[in-house]
Length: 238
Figure 1 (cartoon, rainbow, N blue to C red):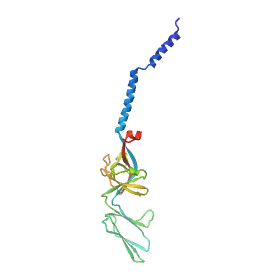
Figure 2 (cartoon, rainbow, N blue to C red; figure 1 turned 90 degrees about the horizontal axis):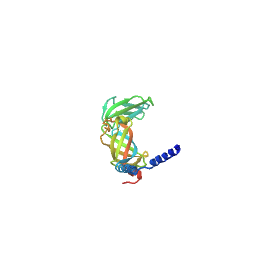
Figure 3 (tube, rainbow, N blue to C red; figure 1 turned 60 degrees about the vertical axis):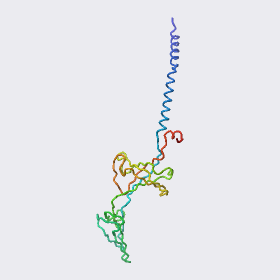
Figure 4 (spheres, rainbow, N blue to C red; figure 1 turned 90 degrees about the vertical axis):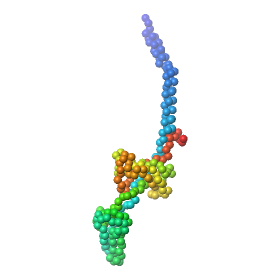
């Protein structure tokens, strides 16, 4: 009677030998595929550039800011308001006359900007406080960055800047694009300042036009010197 166990073991050894023997063409093909992938990765990393980025705070200021004059009604001082609410005034016009009735000293408060008058008769912090505000038209503005001291030496004229404004979500309005015009070499409030020239004014990359305001804040990304992706992996510049 044939030994089934011996036949089974023999067949198993033959199958294992077949499985364990990988044809040379498969090995060569696998090596070529791996080398091709590696070469493609190296070439792609060499050509693709990826910039260093530094974060900054943004302030967009109107070049002409509102004029505000406040006073408290308290003897012996008397005040005469020389303008009316919603009145248009021009630079040099008198807004308020302050008189000290004891010494007869008279002080004239004038405006250095032209605009429309807004009268605020009371204030939340003090009911005796009154204020005159002159609202000028916005014709020009300046874009400033507040840069961290660490790494500021890498920020240079001509570098690209992307600006996201706090009141306008970037996923809906997009971002403003510009470039560094100048870096002010002086520390102000523990940061350096840089002036940015916008490429398309207040029009975003989505084609939305942001209305001008007297003061708008946001964040910015400054694109520093671009490096090839391969340089970042091996730490050597090409």
